Amino acid sequence: MARTFRRKQSMAAISEINVTPLIDLAFALLIIFMITTPLLEQTIPLQLPLENQRPQASRDDTQFQTVSIRADGKVYWGDEPVTLATLDDLLGSAAANPDPPVISIRADGRIPYQKVIEVIDLVKGNDLTRISLDTQVK
Image 1 (tube, rainbow, N blue to C red):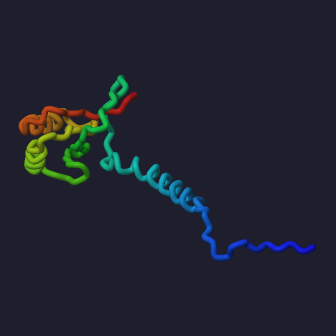
Image 2: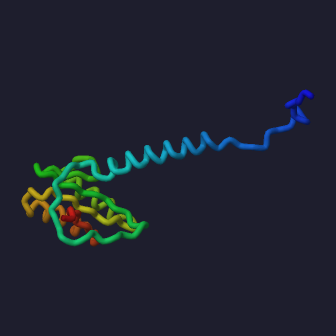
Image 3: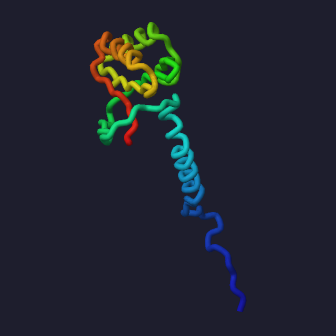
């Protein structure tokens, strides 16, 4: 007795969706984001000062703008090098926003303290009161 493997309706649509390629794509994107996210956070290489306390958690809706000061004294707004006069203009435009960002100052531990104070004076001179000084935890 021969068995036939035909469908009853040859023109019926297949009601199953193959989700294997979608899962593969999701895992590939997850791996890409896991690799690239740490590279986007700290683009200016600095040796930050050390502290003994653990960092405090910040709110998720807080916006940050990073100002970095390298060991050679160069100042960066995000990842763009700027002069102190240009930094003053950028801080003024940030202060004009209704909800100004937190200014995160990342300074190399080997620079003179006066350089950090100059940047903090510019921030305070533009009426930006939310300042974060980044450090490394021991």
